[in-house]
Image 1: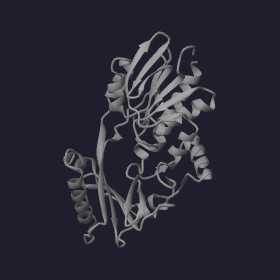
Image 2: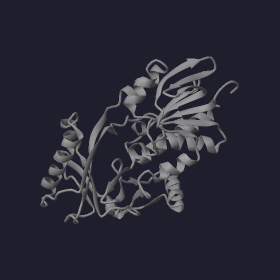
Image 3: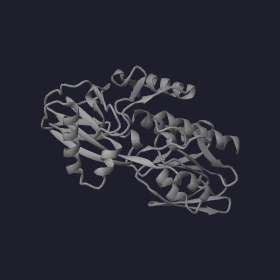
Image 4: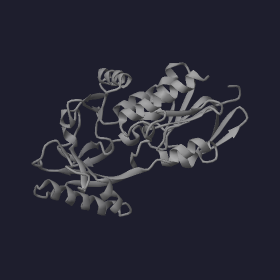
Length: 320
């Protein structure tokens, strides 16, 4: 550690990265976390909007999560005890959401870790006894580097620093998703959640965001276009996509169209990865002291990201 800025650098402060960092910090390790986002969330982010003088938050990424793994069940229980997660029956008896937004658990974990937001890691370079991590705000050095960002981004970042790990990430393909956020003056004649009956439909999911615990707003919806529809619209302007997907939603649900008070869209380029079959849920090169974690190594769910990040931390602790 002599001469190093930190023991461990974690790149990415989504669920995988913070699950990893939390375990390492609990074990007494010195950790720094960098994330290009402006605040906690990743694909569990929440988007704020001013609607008729009220600040409304939309869960425009992951809509809910389930817990089956024993370790993750324990983590979720802790989040519910802290009031940063709660059940949401509209998505199923075993469904949970973050409180007051989906990023509630992420925000809580970040408080116990040293996270630098709004900082993109641009390069990783091997140096004697460790790594140099180049960011838009300057460079730091670390003994260990752990990368917990979407597979496509991880592959690019690790290309020369860790070719074998880059190759693992390069084998993953993620589906895009256009997410539309809409608010209406009157209640829509629909249940709180609407799922597509088949993969061929244009809208994969719709949720009355305002039905979730501790949400603000009167009649607020998040609508996710299907992967196929998202690819068709991938390079269209956001305003155009928002209107198209809303029309798709009304047509698919069969209800009368309504004019939204607020309408916006967000493009998730790496929404749902095609997870790698078999293998470890995290990969760590103990000799070089560099590793990767993410839902693409386990399962494309919030739980899968947590399991992968936690496993990567276990691998680090077992080898140092």
